[in-house]
Image (cartoon, rainbow, N blue to C red; front, top):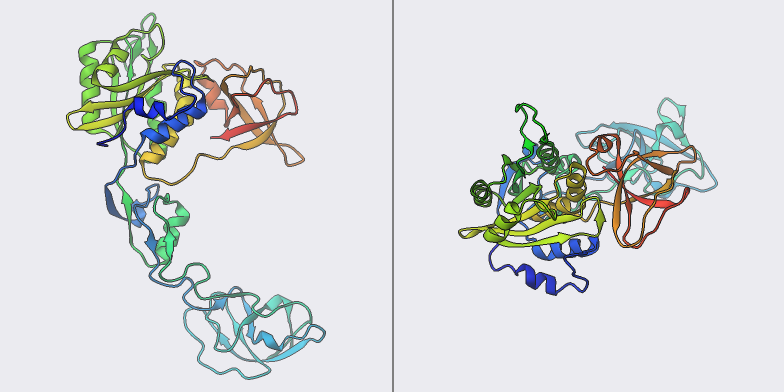
Length: 425
């Protein structure tokens, strides 16, 4: 990411930039200006492509479908013979099966029995489903008047994808549907951006790794495991660097190793006011870093910048230490940032609207993310309740929740029955 603008240059482009009280919207604008997608790409087998991001348009080598074909089992005929007021009688002169073209000829007053997916015989353009017509003889059918129009139940050649057109666009995420689409084109491999490499570690003398005995004043590290899970769901290549104590030498080693290996670094802890200055001091020493107080709850403190190691640099996301704050800041900022770095053209996750079944107290001037449980009522409307205790250390509430209730910056207390935004997990 050479020749990138400094953080001061980026901040100068924002009208409402105040690192001591930064609105969520300005954080997202800042990150959008800071981040650049990876450029390296590789060709992978479709089976290995799930969750990857296309690095170029995928141009279809064929028409899909390759021929006009029947959308259902029934009888193919020339639809121009339909009459709105009179039933149409037709003689059945053959059967068209899927997988090969029917070789016979069809004349006026005749039709062909046809299976779903079978190529439409020459000169025929309409299909009547077998359940909508009646057999008047062993080889004759009658189609009631007014049921069909010319072209009904026929799939046109190339109506899904035309040969030479983009089947998938650059920046698209390979979903199961996209993998199936590629296979339908006869394309065995696809060009994708390389996986984003993300290094992560927790900081603090009070943090215990799993397997260590409990001790007074210490807590077991949960943040690395939640970060690991969220990174895994994005398909990132992960570098787990464990727990780093509040020691300048150890912190410098950790940051340098992370910058050498990764495109992005995620830390938890050490960025709040009043915490030991080792982590913040090392971030400043090794890179171009800003420390924010974001107008949000939970997750107010956050550090963002670049950590430099030789001619390489990695984007830094210094998250708070509280477990829920880590998850909220990851979902609100880090996830969309990493998606951009991965090369995806996908926009932010869409929010839904739900009626709150309880009072949600809030003052304007910050964005609040409350853990919620969304369900659907008998009228088909979405409803939401909180999980109760909204403390930033109550990780069990994130387990109970299936969404975040997002109360916007200028919003005040929501009353029972008010519609609120919800971001589903």
